[in-house]
Amino acid sequence: MRPLGAFWLAALLALPIFALAVLPPFGQRMVTLVGIYALMGLGYQLVFGQLGALNLAQGALFGVGAYTAALAAPMLGALALPVAILAAAIPAAVVAGPILRLQSHYFALATLALASIVNLVAVHAESLTGGANGISGFVSSLPRGPVLLAMVWICLIAGVLIYAQLFRGRLGDEARLLREAPLMAATLGIDGGRWRLAGFVVGAALAGLAGAFSAAISGVVSPDVTGFSVMVLCLTSVVIGGSRHPMGAVVGALLAVCLPEMLRDFQDAWLLVYAVATLAIVRWAPGGLAEWIDRLSGARSPVPHKPVVPERLLPATGAQRLVLDNVVKRFGGVDALAGVSFAVGRGEIVGLIGPNGSGKTTLLNVIGGLDHVDGGAITLDDTHLEHLPPHVIARKGLGRTFQTLMLEGDTRSADLARAVSTGAAFLLLDEPAAGATDRERGQLTSLLRRLRDAGRGVVIVDHDIELLTRVCDRLVCLDRGKVIAIGGPAEVRADPRVRASFLGLVEAAA
Image (cartoon, rainbow, N blue to C red):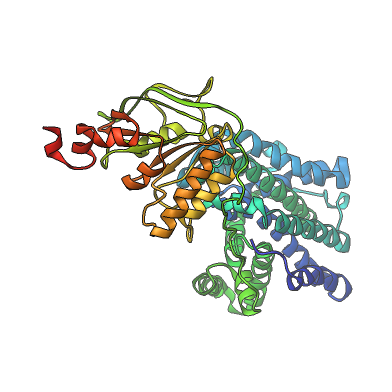
């Protein structure tokens, strides 16, 4: 992610300072509102921007913070603000378990249901929330005016700086993997569930704080604050400003607050003008206005980190032996794997060959936990892997590359380097030589030998039988999910069944 440059840092500091020094109370109120909505949007960027999940509960959690501040302020005063943070974060953590297991539109629908429940409680729990009339008479216990403006912007500036610093390095790379290639992320040991939990809860905490500040500036809290319009404002401002840019939420909030005021002369048509302006921004600045401004100013676009294989491979540590015992995998009524058994030791390279559809990639998937086995056992020493999630298997010493590249602009060498750099004792390589030049094949051969010398165990799938013959200690040939031959490269290549099924020499099987 792009670092926060001097221009944006100056802009972030200048707006509240200018408001406090020059603007009248109405102007200060507007700047305070910008900070409040930017805080809510910053929290939304964690789930929507960094992880690519459409969370429709952020506006409702904003409302939870507002109601909590209104209820707690008469007793706690300004301490109601941190209580509002907890009031939004704790329910988010409680419901996160079932909600975060859902994917794509199911996650969006679940968070929409959560938002609807919050709104229903706000409307119907009259003894607590005041129902449709809402809650008032609490504002004297909360910060107001210039003090509130300063508090909002101190929190926002700190949040933006922390966000920019965290996601410019390793965390930014992990977030990109989770967003664009979740299977690859899992095989690198990245726990997507923990990431989503942290993003959802921290985002909720920022929404709760923003809601509490909103209660302080408005003096009244009603069910409208939990309504879907707040969520639409949050989503729109983040998309317009830039869902992953450190200043995206701030730029988006500035427009969301100021545009309606600027369009007052359009009377009832202002919403149409606002919609047209929004569509224009999305059409011509799809990365958001903050990114567009960076391009106009000549700022360099951030270049994704491209991993490279270390020049010196450290000796492997950990498990000594990967064993497959009678592994079975079915898809419907088809046996993709039918009792596959073989073992790989550290410092050994085993080539997996067979015709298309023989089960080679499926076998790598079940070893790495991407597919669950229907029978048999897979062990690293004494540790059974059959029912472990992929990120746990990866952390136990199993790395993986993929036949199909999953990241935009990625290369096979980068995919391989990523797996090697984990330090895994065993590597599963799925067609690493596909489409490679002669020079790249030579580099791959050298790397495989270096991996063996470093004590790594390698299972490699590839159609280049000559490459496999040069580097592999043994070959395993699959046909229709079954092992039909296993042994040294020359022995397996000479086997009539292998020559018939894999090499296409039908006459050799007669």
